[in-house]
Length: 167
Image (cartoon, rainbow, N blue to C red; front, side, top):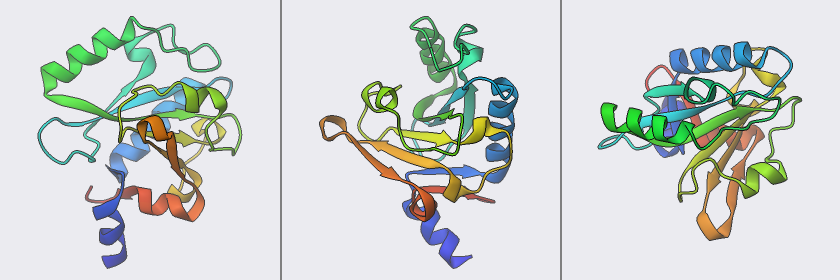
C-alpha cells in the first residue's frame, strides 16, 4: 500500500480503478476488434492537475473519428472546449488503442500530439483494448514540447500511471 501511494503521488496521471475499467471497456467496445479508438482524459481545472475525473471518447465529440486509425477532426475540438468550460475541467491527457501489443508511439503519434501542451500525457493501450490491462502493459508518453516526448513502458509505466482505489 505504501508503495502504491508513493507511485500515485509522483505519477504523471492518476485514475481510479473504476474509471480505468470503464475506459478500457469503452475503448474495446468502440474498437470492436477492427479499428483504433480513443478518448480525452479530463481533470479539474483548479485542483489535482493529474487526476482523471472524466473520460470523453473521441467519437462522442466527432462521430466520424473511428475510421480504422484515429482521425479526430477539427469539428470535435469546439465541443471538447465547450464541455471543459461548462464543467470547469481541462484536458490532462488522451488515450488511444493500438492493434497489437506495441505501446510505443508511432511516427504519426509522436509528430501529431492531440494536445500540444507541455505536460500533456498520451496513453497507448494494446490489443484494441479487447481485454483488461495491467499498468505495465500501457505506454505512457509525456509531451515535453520542443524536446519531444518522455516515454515509460513496461515496469516503468507503473511509476508514470497510477491506477488505484483512490486516485
